[in-house]
Amino acid sequence: MTRSEFRKDIVSGDWILVAGGLKKKPNFFAKAPKKIKISKKGCPFENVKEGHKLILSSEFAKVVLNKFPILTPRKVCPIPLSEAPYEKMAGVGFQELVITPDHSRSLGDMMKEEILSVLEAYLSRYQALKKEKCIEYILIFHNHGPSAGATVPHPHSQILALPIIPLDVERSLSGSASYFKKYSRCVHCAILKKELRNKKRIIYKNKDFIAIAPYASHVSFETRLYPLKHGSNFEEMSQAEKENFADMMRAVFAKLKNGMNNPDYNFFIHTAPVKADHVKHYHWHLEILPRTNIWGGVELGTGTEVIKMPPEESAKILREART
Image (cartoon, rainbow, N blue to C red; front, side):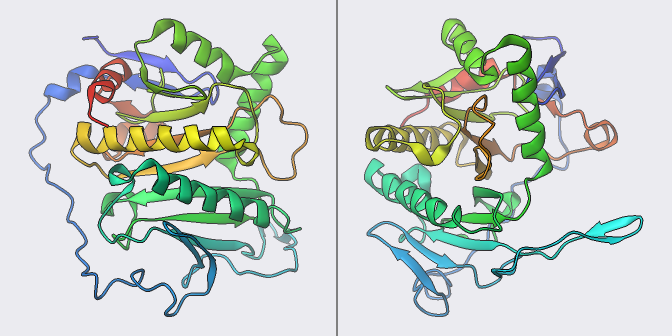
């Protein structure tokens, strides 16, 4: 692809500008992000028993309460209060850390068994937190690298249990519901059917899962991991599916590290809200967003994201990268 083109995200309705020609544009201010250097001796996650409340422990993952939470853990559910024309609500919720034992080995360096242990920790805490009466949505996310917001370099994920359904999730659910109402089928299943036939944007595939570069990627090298079988809830995986999802994560994160020279990235899991019983149209998935560019005037002024690497090219690079 040599010319620029707009592509529409059929779930959110966003228009994305794929401008492959920008790869040749010089950036006179580009420089590598400053790495955070903290020795093992000074790392707050090297001995999580010191100063952290341990919730769960296994060979390759420990779950602790966040010492500096952005939410307040309370059993009393928050009530929206009016301060016309504004509205506010107490920041009630839960925030936990999932910490892996090695100070310098990221997900891209781990074996399947290690990632499976991390995945089991995600699922165990998800199941526990969804029982809290005030919780409406649980976000599992991971920040890798300083430009992705990681303040401690020791690999760790976070679990955020919220009393609200975030707007971005609402938009995703709304887009999925609209497509289902119009076509009587899951929009993500339609996407996967197209990608399996097209093959250009497939990065990795196993028995139960597939990784693709989305047709209307929001950033260069965006990668999404989907279950091949339709399902709305991340927490309802069988043991065999857990094994294959761990294999999928191992392969994809290794490809990102080896194919992109270990980029900073964020990943998060989009799944159905914990109390929702009307979103069977939704298809859960994991989204990885490498930090390859900074928003400028076009993005900030219009909300239209501009990507330099066409998804077909990023998929080819990652598909061929070592695992």
